[in-house]
Amino acid sequence: MNLSKRIAVAAAGLIVSASIGAQQYPERPVTVVVPFTPGGSSDITARTVAAKLQETFNQTFVIDNKPGANGGLGGKFVANAKPDGYTLFVGSIGVFAINPVLYKDLGYDPRKDYDLLSVAVRTPNALVTRADFPANNVKEFIDYLKKNPNKVSFASSGTGSSDHLTAALFWQKTGTSGIHVPYKGGSAAHMDLIAGNTDVSFQNLGSITQHVKGGKMKLLAVTSEKRDPTVPNVPTLSEAGVPGIEVYSWQAFVAPKGLPQNVKARLQPALISAIKHPDVVKKFNEIGFEVVGNSPEEFNKFLNEELARWKQVVDTGGIRQSD
Image (cartoon, rainbow, N blue to C red):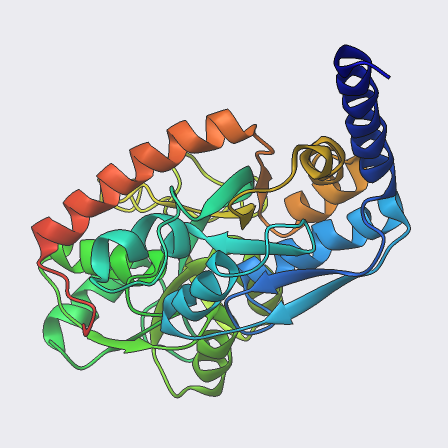
């Protein structure tokens, strides 16, 4: 066989091999790392979409919660994982857009260490208090804070999380103050707020809806530009007299940098299809999540914009990783 024929045969073999690989993925269980405790927004997003991917591929998708450092521990773990499609990562705005501008030695760079797959959902933050907190609306809440400076505890899902920075913005805009109490995820903050161990929080709307309906928390306002259709009677902060705090938290899927093209060819369209499946959209909408499901290119552009935005917020507020 001459050289040209050998090259042609080898090339054909590579094409066939890639085709077979694309058809076979995933051949074994896929691990979806969530860098927070179970029950928070990232966890809800991961479990909802993974269940649909499991149906699509007829393969197991296992959720692995690795909380710590506002998602930093999970983020570093995935950055160092093998890029074979069998480790995926679902993180928040804090993991991808705030940690990189807040922590000096983060251990991962979202633009260099991950293949960006899709922003799955977004949701406004919600100003919630423990059920027996004295204030029943935003005006009463601000008045209470001014009468009790540095006495009201604000729970967050971690230092540098969107709920932490939303609280910081709120203090700046209203001339008030509070005590920041960081947790290792939103669900842990929820539980202490419900138990009355903390007073208030700016949690993702989608993660606290059921607690509010159950009378375990009071919802005073949302941080969206317009009222959220899931809670139409709840005002935005702007409507309540505090403009300039339009904040959305978002959850996204990524993978370790360097996914094989044949894996991407199977995974990417299946992921978008799962995120936008009518059953999944309905479930997300019911708990206050707005489905996004954008492309890797759109995700990359959006991430660059978010990194610039939150760097300005962190710098302006003089916020440190120990706050």
